[in-house]
Image 1 (cartoon, helix red, strand yellow):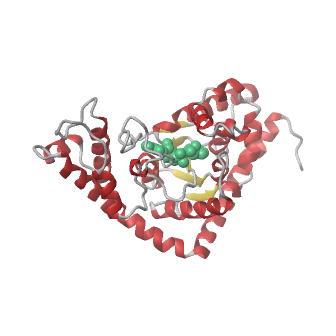
Image 2: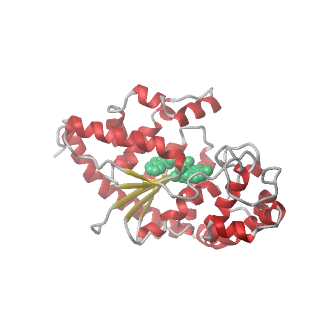
Image 3: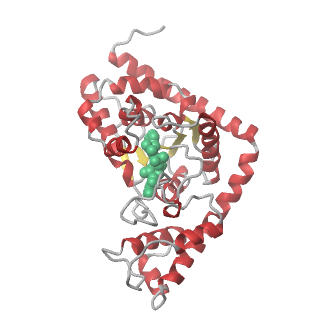
Length: 332
Ligand code: TYM
């Protein structure tokens, strides 16, 4: 690989990403490919920390892979693979688990949230989820990790694990930095704009999916919860409008002042339709590219097989050194 900084990021295979996934993370991954060496992955092993239907998981993983390509990840420029295809992640995870404290994992807000949501299945994988995420990143000694705000705590933990390992065994891991977009790092629910937009929301109107058709996107925007004023301005307390302005800004490139000027004297109704149209138009090329790619299973297989080979070659070298450091006997 060229001598550039290394980026790593991953996404769970929900099949079709949310507008939050897209604006907060995935849309930034493509443009980073020219400046950095980039490694991206569909994290199917993380996905099974909550119950999955195996048939759907397989389908969703393939869809997610194709969707990342449709969102601009170029397999000639980046390494794009499926997590379970690269065994070093699970192997490094074990070493990192042995360097992660019970107390640290218990403090993770995502673990607490998901335990509450699935009280009948608080499994060990859910608990050690952040250690596997650290393994994803550290297996490549990544410098930067582009994520949305909700993953910041996990990234802090990955940094702590790397630092602890370095102290115990001598400097080895690069301590990764978060790379968080200024606008859109936390896209909020359209129905409860103090909560992050998430596919697991029970109300389907809360969340735009990037494969939603134009009418659906406009309908969801029209129903977005706002406030009782009638002024399109970005101001504290106007969570719903702030969120719609953030979304509009990220798909049109207009700043908040320009948006306020554009909608001065107009009602929320006009604004919501404009947001819906802008989002749908922005996503149209992604939708059509996805429809094309998903037809070509043989090509997708070629891409993810090659991606996994490259990722394994790279991470195996790192893992071999880690094994030496912790005192495992060389296989020879
Ligand atoms: P996941 O699959 O939940 O989300 C993928 C990316 O989308 C971002 N995101 C959001 N950004 C803004 N607003 C939102 N409403 C929103 N919802 C999601 C997330 O912050 C994330 O960047 N654990 C990770 C996947 C992972 C990973 C990794 C990430 C596994 N290993 C290594 C980075 C590096 C996750 O579940 O993301």
